Structures are given as C-alpha cells and as structure tokens.
Image (cartoon, rainbow, N blue to C red; front, side):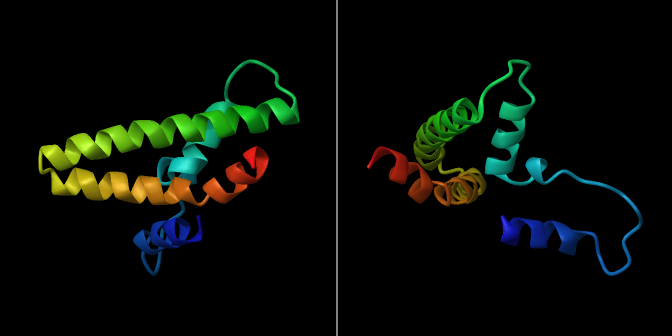
Length: 101
C-alpha cells in the first residue's frame, strides 16, 4: 500500500490545505477490507479473515475477466487500470496461499 499512499500524498502538493481522504478510495485491498468491516453482521476474527480471503479471490477472478474484455475492446486505459488494481491485490496472494498450502 505504500506506493499508493505515497502517490496520494504527492497529489496534495507542497502546501496542502487541511482535508481528508480515504486510502480505501485509492487502493483495491484497502477498499475491500473497509467493505467487509462495514457489514452489519458481527464476525469473529477467523470469520473476518476468511471473508476477506474470499472477497480477494472473487475480486481477482472478476478483474481477470474484465481484463480479458478490456483487451478485446483494445481499451488501453482500462487495461492499465485493471492491471494496477490486480497488482495491489497480488500482494495478498502469498498470505492467502499459506492458508491453503
């Protein structure tokens, strides 16, 4: 998440005025974690971890499908956006694989 956070801070400029922003609006994984935590049901820590893992896997599959479609339509900007979102999620893959190895 560090590169995304750095990019967000850089957009504020040298003398930023007081304002707030959510990293969840700029980073795929942070947004997904926020969504899980904002759900009304009360989950145990293990259930939260499982829910996040499931969400990450589902999002990766969705993004791969979208990536294929974006390439077919030759929408290079969309392809790059999806590529960036996938790279943000790929940081989670080694952690997910340790649970299922």
